[in-house]
Length: 336
Image (cartoon, rainbow, N blue to C red; front, side, top):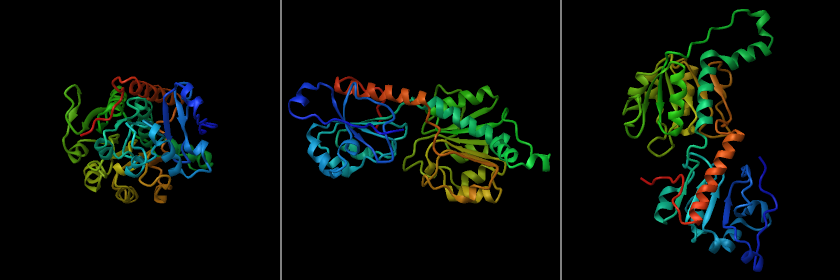
């Protein structure tokens, strides 16, 4: 992905003639907006267009005109940033999770927040199922076995496990969790879930306690939002309840799982395996996991497909158009 280049900052008569709404692109240098929205909006990207000007000075200079902001990936939106943007009324997130946005400060200041809605849900659900199949059937480990030349020397390769019939507990039955459930039902899995509230329309068994869910599951799939309440929601008690044959799949956020405890449980053989797309201190991954054939690792790529980029572009554009037209937002984050 490459950043938006050559973003023009019109002034004077040029600005008056340009009727496109002004939107600030807020991003860390290592992140880029993966699509071009300049046909619809006048984008201000301090990194691409004002490299020689201190970031704070740039924002202060343009602050009176900035009513909407796009935050790219997990780029933080905190009180210090909001202090620089007194006219801001909308933060448009490009991800499903919003743990990088200070929702309390946004609410206090009357700033609306949107996320990617369901734009990533199908792709993340596909990836969760792929990780689960990989762990059970040892696909990545088998690939390494063949490539290393081990097959002629060791004709016997360890058996994998059937996915059909497994009891799968989903932590977070939102749009992603529901898509995971739909896919696993097709494999013949039995689904149960934990969520903030019981879903009246969900045809699956509800457990109000995650430990109870783990006791009754062979697999835990983690795809809930990261909040203060869900931080380390998968802890040593849950891992103990899941048991030696249990598998943990995490496509949510790294900090949903107590990573240090997970490493200990995996290296001691106290749970059966894990498929991890996210980690607590990305891009750092515990080295103890590198040699474990029952662990599948991925560099936070579950959401990333060309199709998902197009879907999120449509959602973000719709939210911005709605905001500038004084219409209801498409995917608002509900404050609690």
